[in-house]
Image (cartoon, rainbow, N blue to C red; front, side):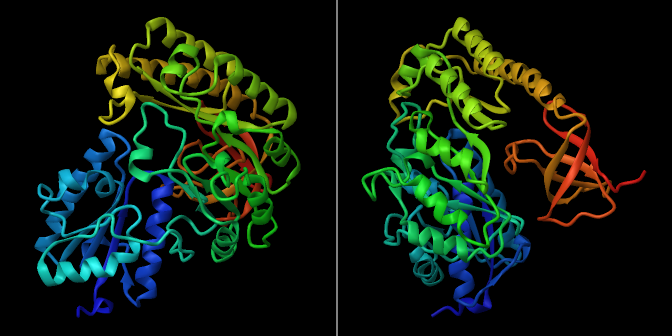
Length: 444
């Protein structure tokens, strides 16, 4: 038997924040086994690469990372373990070809980690993909700054959008029990901001309890003394109901922010995507949210160049952005994924056209965002300090309308600021993404 307590374990986690949570739970298993975890991958004897395979670019990034990391085997690295979505969906294609990797585990196989690793040390390589049985574990080694953390409340997806591989990778939507999520949140310690994530958080509970239970879960989490606030990401627009809007409005610990992936604005394209909304329903939802939850920040994502999308429909999406005036948006060129219904559609659009349309949308949104950001000049905002600027020139943080990594920052000067604490920041300047200011007690 291999004595793994004498090994150092490193981790690279690629892809989304949901992947990050999976990686953190795997690290907890390694820690609980009595093993050492290192942040310096050059010192690891066992290196885990937790992968994404949602899009072709993500698969390329994962494979490139595995190949690049194989160079560490000329030093002290003994085994590369590939986990997550790439082997979950594509193990048949990669096992024989990707010989740089020694161990393969899918997205639900983390309970077999040490079994698979032991076999690799005995036989050279192992494939334990689709062998796991654990649905949930509470332990975490948090890899974010300690004042915020993600909580994955469900996995899989039932929405069946025609462009998306997630159901083929992660399976049907499955919620985790409220009591287990509450226990996990309690175990995180003092957290200023708990960010709830799933492929669709608004569907939470429908499979497990036969009804939507997101608001019940939110109330249970915000009742915890160690949780300062809760932020919701990835809300399916047609599932945002009266109860959720009331919770956003009335619960003081729920951040007035929603990430609502709309994907497009035009009815014909939305229908081809198997999205249930329309341009009219989206604008009505945005208007209602702003009316009932004053000051709410709304973020979204959109796909450009979906098959058969015309220049007129692309221009109409730009018009939608100017009308909706969303706080922030991400835009992505459509990725043709084999195994999805959209893959078979005629009218696939050239890559150069898709990239041009993405660039155009970002230009439109920059103008919208700049107008919104300029509106904060002269205001005092409550800002959560995330850290010190790399050049030591001051501090940076986020107001309520910014989620980590995907939205802008507030850069501010202060005599002193502590990570994880809130400060009142007077805003002096803005660009289309970030704000700049100072605390009241700052003197130049």
